[in-house]
Length: 156
Image (cartoon, rainbow, N blue to C red; front, side, top):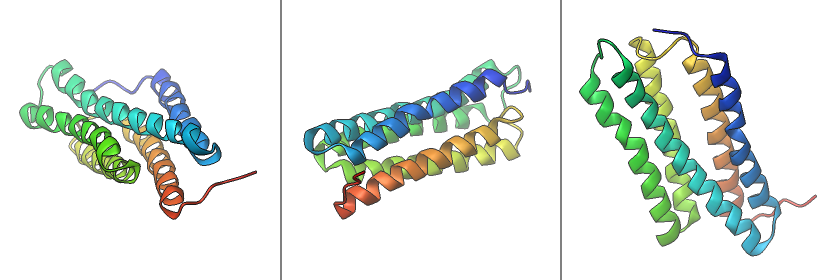
């Protein structure tokens, strides 16, 4: 399996900017402005979760001899469904439920990817990148959820 391109690391890190920016705005801006950024954070989380499932589709479809292809393709759809459900929950139940579902979705995805890595199904270096990105996303979403659940506002 080919190595992970160096540009993937840079692009992956750049992909954290919307998470960190929206989280900061959610925590610092008052009222509707903060709520708008919270909605954007949830939407971006759902999009990225869908992207993570698509990665495995690409790995299976691009492989010359796909191993466990059917199961991997099926599991590749689950992050998209979780992201979609988070969007629905955000509107119907509230942002707290959406954030918790996204946190669970990212945690479950990294767990599944770690299992794929043990089976040699992802490129070398992929898991180092994914762990760094996933931990950052999970901590960011968790901070926002905790501050929002406690009704706190961060002021400087």
